[in-house]
Length: 318
Ligand code: ACO
Image (tube, rainbow, N blue to C red):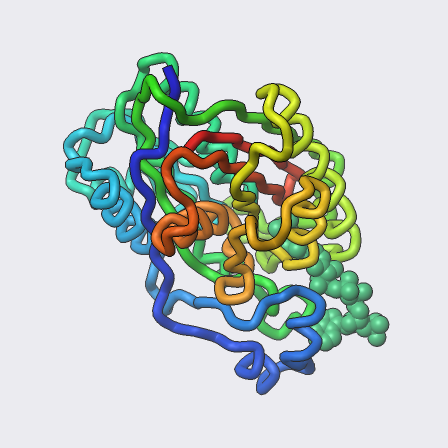
């Protein structure tokens, strides 16, 4: 028994912020941002637009593409770093917004690797028969954690949501999942605000040591891709599509090179979405499917890495 992606959906806020827009308020340029990151524009949520608002639309579109009635959902996992509230979980908020109740709903926090962690978790539920219709969504309003005066970080990120419906299948589906974490790297990428006695302590702005993150990401993503293929007993040449976390075009290109995949077999959205953290992989997946490039019967490598550090991969038959 496999758990198989029955449908995908996504949502991006309407507002587009281009590199030129940013260059009007901070000391940067389209040429600098494009050459270092591959990013040309990003979407930014309206004030008041919450993670659950973005996620709800993505879920509705995924249900529609799967041909599934929402009443069939029996598991909801939300990957997010920007929950609507400290609690209740964004998953519980979404369950209510969907007009549903009863089944388990919870959030997963693994920053940019959140969707991989959530998908790997849902896979266990579906494969063991504990769920028959799982919805996994990655959604972020990361713009809330960005200091828009900090040119070293604000150029990188964007908002969005992507979702999948997972159902049991005898044919094919998730073939292998690999998850890792190493908390000793937590200082190179963080938002360290905490609530203490009702007051917010520490800076909520995203802090990043760009070079250190870059180096760690390149190595970890190459290693986890190899490890996942080896565990599944599948050669690199069998991978039809790489659907990576969209942090930086140079990191994506390096991972593809390692897998021996030409960029024509890599779904790239970072140029238009920026880094949407937990939303980036399901957003890219949905774009690949809706554009007709990703088709049934193909083998996909999904992989991500984020603050923590947490990283992982999911190899699947689509
Ligand atoms: N515009 C113009 N100049 C800039 C900008 C900007 N937006 N940002 C920084 N600079 C300047 C710096 O001040 C520095 O100037 P100096 O030499 O006078 O001090 C110069 O550009 C070079 O800065 P570096 O930080 O060395 O530039 P680098 O080539 O490393 O690129 C970047 C920075 C793009 C952040 C890169 O390190 C990177 O992509 N790192 C990975 C980060 C990432 O992907 N994070 C996503 C979150 S984690 C994840 O999702 C895995």
